[in-house]
Image (cartoon, rainbow, N blue to C red):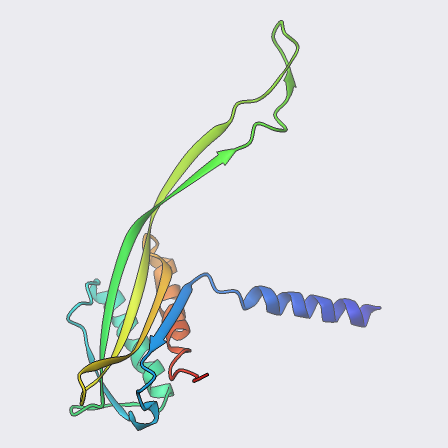
Length: 175
């Protein structure tokens, strides 16, 4: 019996740890020959981040590309465009009046009031475009969103995590 409980706990733990807080998606050109790409060069024209976050993004992106067998070069097969953006999110929450019954006043039992509140925060996204230098066409794009922009400690942890999640989809698995 203890053996089954241990297995159940292990499966539950794996299930919880494999859930990502990020939304990641990718797309690719089906005509691209991803095995022919060996070198890359990162271009950061549209990377509007502070220097600390920019270093985090570029270091992790380089690490991920190199783990895929690509090397940095001056005459690259791929140009890597990196972009970042953020948007303000407003969450609206509401409490239900049920369960807020009580005794009071001259009329006896009553119902509680419905309560609504909002919270505002900024959510960041990273976009990685891989452009074939010979054809000058986009061959792969990865997008990841869900970075907590308002928290420096969260960004420090989340930027490498989301970049790894984005690059997990490169090279694409053809169907």
